Length: 233
Image 1 (cartoon, helix red, strand yellow):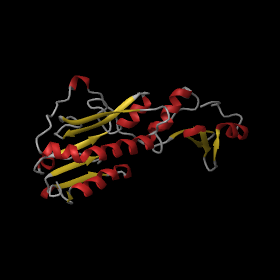
Image 2 (cartoon, one colour):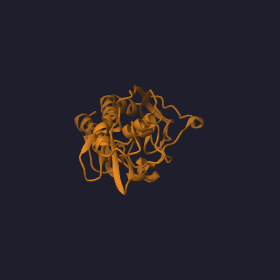
Image 3 (cartoon, one colour):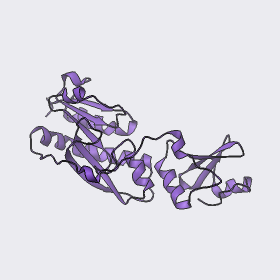
């Protein structure tokens, strides 16, 4: 369907595979005003009902969770924080409510306790890019029966800020929770605390960094700062 005009709206680098596959299979145009279909992925801006209805076939959204679970802007991070063993990708026909529209396609993906946001975001949107051409073709052709979401099962996740990764060093999370936080918030907003008027940052693989100093394994860090309250992570 190379003659199908598609507009893509997506912000972060990890959605680049979506744009690449759209360029390969369809005709990519720069505006919703003269297009057949809008494809949205991690755009970070809420479209108006008028914008959603401007393309001939409306707009579809690629969301990295098994909707209606984790509606909102941080579903990957929430899945990691909760220790979920599975998540997935959902493609919906967008309506005026956030992550609410009927489901066009859904696929489950397994999670491991080594996954972090950086790994999962790339993995999920790469997989979405692989199935997207057929999903769009079948959607446009009317071959897909749209499935309404069960709003009674909806859960929500919030927008993140730099403070999301902060914890009080005098009341630190358990090692298990800290590990989930570090993986969920890598690379942004990161996990951090304040100690002796300095910012201390935490990284995957048990690394830690005093403000202005090099990143070190925790053991080496404690050799230099034996009074640091956190002894394991």
